[in-house]
Length: 261
Image (tube, rainbow, N blue to C red):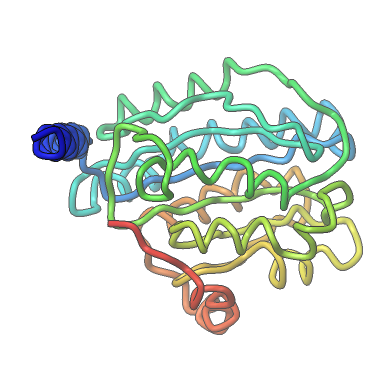
């Protein structure tokens, strides 16, 4: 008799848990893309360069090209979050997950970025950053729900230097590989050139996943133009012809990716 009672309790508990999971999933807002902007905030970037980089993102979300790309996707919307990072234990969500489904919402997200202030100026740990923040995509990467569901989860990494502070277990590309294995669809990188070998580092160790691509800005002064173009491609999911040759390299690590839908 006691066994029957325990069995009934177990079934009831399992049914309740399943019901809660379905309710949480049903409450998620469907969007065409969940986009994580992962922005270098390390000490190699001075305050003027920091402002140029941040302003680039602000202007991109205010631009007609990015706003039209958002509205043109099947749901007419994306979810996006803005995160700054520096050393191995330094990651900060500066603007949380935000629904962008109109020009007004894009402008509001741009204003939220513009209102942020600098929090780090340490070493460069891009692998630690990717490793630490990819669970923020929520249930699609095995973590708590983030309020959105989409067919694509993409990390957009920008920076001006190769990793010099992530622990050895994450080198050379462990942060990226862990993100892809958890269910992130693609990691795209934009390198702000100046450091020798940076383009090769980003292509080999940052960019990865299906349809991923590499972009670059020749300097911080050129970042605004480069990031606007990159975001437009990211949101539409259609690469420029020059990018096609990088897609095969971007598939590195995709075989270990576990999609959670």
